[in-house]
Amino acid sequence: MSIDRGVGPHGKSVTLPAQSVPVSHEADVVVVGGGASGIGAAIAAAMNGASVLLVEQRGYLGGMGTVSLVPAFCPFTDKEKPIVRGIGMALMERMKQACNADYRSEYKDTLDWVPIDPETLKRVYDDALEEHGVRTLFHSFVYDVLKSADGRRIEGIVVVNKTGRSAIRARYVIDATGDADIAALAGVPFQKGGDEGELQPGSMCYLLANVDRARFNRYLEETGDSGQLHATVERAIVEGALPEGRKSISGLAWVNDYLVGVNFGHVFGIDGTKAEDLTRGAIEGRRLVERQLRFFQAYVPGFERAHLVASGEQVGIRETRRIQGDYVLTADDFMNARSFPDDIARNAYYIDIHLANSKAKMTFTHLKPGQSHGVPYRVLLPVGLDNLWVPGRAASSDRAVQGSLRVMPNCFAMGQASGTAAALALRNGTGSREVRLPELRRLLVEQGAWLGEQTAASAAE
Image: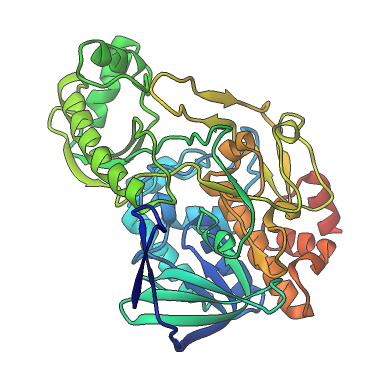
């Protein structure tokens, strides 16, 4: 090994010797990332006949819902009807059934803002992948990609884990990392953040036990404060108990009457593609949680004896890279509730861009109840590669739409479309762009997805 000077952030670089690595796994479809989009992709590819391996850097599935303890699923409806169905909705319903009787009774008919029981959800995801024959490889980071001689295909990935460094060969790859890690390694162009590189802040979510929901609800009735404690939070900021910034709590998700998930406040300046930033985010996030816990105990009846039982393993990340795809979904598409001939999902979640610093304003833009826009297949296809799909928050869109498209229900839907497309490409021996769109859309509808009333009627004929 030699050391060179003048290269890299610290003025040094090292040259590693060439090394042959073993091939540890092979699969028709390799899915990288075990969040909502990766889970949807892996199950869909497997149920349509592909052999599937899912690679995940943690020791469990679930992405932001388990890694970062995001406390609830975002809406599956357009406020009138469910529009994200299929694999994602089935898994959420399965989590409900695996929870206790009180939880099942309270949330039986709820499709929007359903609280997440993270330990139950981990087991639900494990079981679902196993039932569909998906192999999983946990505790593994992708180190590099193996490209074909013409650069048009990814032929495998190189992973690093406790076993060592090895190659995984694949015919098709789905980048469900949320950060377009595989696409970036393969040289796909991307955008990140706003015009000046600003990124939405992260949030350290957490679970509080030993709380009294009935007492808390009485407090809201007596004071008229909102469930997001807007007035109480503003008073605490004025009195110095909380820092300047978010004027209300993003969400309290009651798993039961004594356990609540909390999404509250921001950690600024975190780039989720940098380990150094994630480290700082974890440390600052835990300090902020401790301060928020003192706020709850001092200001919020029902939380006097609240006990912090868990904070996120990682600060929750809202945005990093957005790939350059065959089509870039825009705010104009959102505002006009536009549909496309190659729609593979529908989205109605509002544009939700969190402030980049404590002085900036947040952006919320809603569609009317009953409205949704289409998500075209082309946003999943990174330019320059013929066997890679990128579902989830890194799909091809402008920054405004990314603030809407990034949530878990949409990630499930895009993942299901990607996995189904990969299985069809395998079946027909084609690349990602040669997938027959009528066949893809028909299969998605047959397997539970919703692509609009007209598509549903056509599939039923």
